[in-house]
Length: 470
Image 1 (cartoon, rainbow, N blue to C red):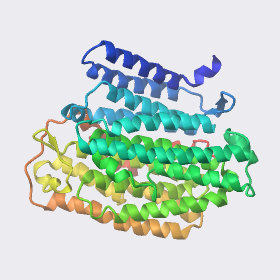
Image 2: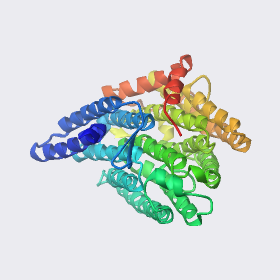
Image 3: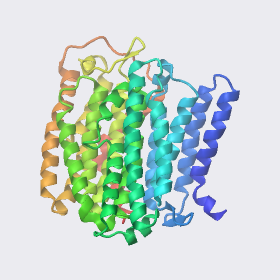
Image 4: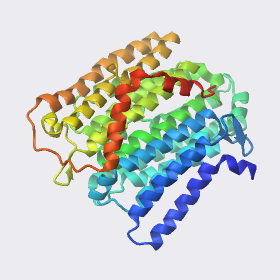
C-alpha cells in the first residue's frame, strides 16, 4: 500500500479515464461536462505530483522511479496538456470534433507519457510508449470526414508502427546481451566489447528520434501537422516532445552511460541534420502548420545538441530549451487558432497579410512569438539557444555550435518573412474577434512570459539546476 502512494497521480488519471468513459456512455451530449472534468483532473493530478517527495524513490522492484526530474517533466506534461485543451475549445466546437472521446483520448495519451517519464525498465517504458502512440493515431485522424485528417492518421500510424518495431527490436537486443530489462542492471552489464548491445542502442535511438521528429526520421511530421485538426497539431507539437526528451535523457544517462562515446556521434548527427533541415526546408512553405512542423524539427535539433554534450550543464540546457520552446509554441498555436473568418479556419501564411491594421494586439503577440522563435534578444527564445550554445562550447564541440549559429540565422528568414507579411503587406478581410477566453488567456500568458523572461531568468535556471541529474 505504501508504494501505491507514490503512483497516486497515475492511479488517479487511470480511474478518471475509466469514469469519464462510463459518464460519456450514460449521459448524452456530455462533451462540455467531460471537458471540464478532464481539465479539473489534470489540475488535481499536477497537485498530487507536486506533493511527491523531492528525492529518488524506486518502486516495483526498481522498475519505476520517482525523482525530481520525473516530477518536473510530469508537471510540464500535464500543464501543457491542460493549456492545449483550454485554448482549443472554440476550435473543437467549430470543427464538430466535440465528441466525448476527444478529451478522454488526450488524457489516456498523457497517462502513457507519464508512465514513460518515470519508467526505469524497458517493459514499463514500452507499455507507456504504446499507450501514448495508440491514442495519438486516433487523434491524428479524429476528423473522420476530412481526407487530410484520415491521411495524416494513416501516415502516422504506418510510420510510428515501424519505429515502434525498431525500438522494440533494440530493446530485445539490449535485454538479450545484458540479461536484464532494468536500467541500472543494463548499465552494470554494458561495456564497449558488447557489440550486440551497441546495435540495440542504435535501434532504440532510431525509435526515440522518430518520437522527437529528428532528421532523418522526421518524414511524418509536416504531413501529420498539416493534415490533423489544428487542436491535435498543437498537442503533437507540445506534449509528446516532453516525454520523448525525458526518455532520451533517462536512456542516455542511465543504462547507456558507459557507451557514451558510441552514442554521442549519433546524437550529434541527429542534432546537426535536424538543425539544417529545419532551417532550410521551412523557407518555401506557405501553410503555417507545415512551417511549424519544420520549425519544431529545427528546435528539437537544438535540444539534442545539449544532450550530446554528455554533461550535467548540457542536460539542464536541454530541459530549459524545451520549457521555453513549449511556451513559444503554445503562443504560436494560439495565434493560429485566431485565424478564423466566417467560421472557417485559415492556414495559409498569406492570409495574415496586413494583420497589424485590423488586429494590432494579435499582430503584436505574433511579433513577440516569432522574434522569440528566431532567437532574437532579449526575448526568451534567445536565452534558450544561448544556454544550449554555452553548454556545447564548454564541452569543446565548436563545430556543433557553429552549425547551430548558422542555422539560427537561416531560420530567422522565414520567421521575419511572416512578420513582414503581417506588418507591411496590404490588409485582407479581418478575422473574427469573438475569441474564447481560454485562448486569450493562453496567448496573453505566453506572450508576457516570453517578453519578461529576461528580467528574472534565474527562476527557471535555479528550478532546473535543483533537479538531480546523472
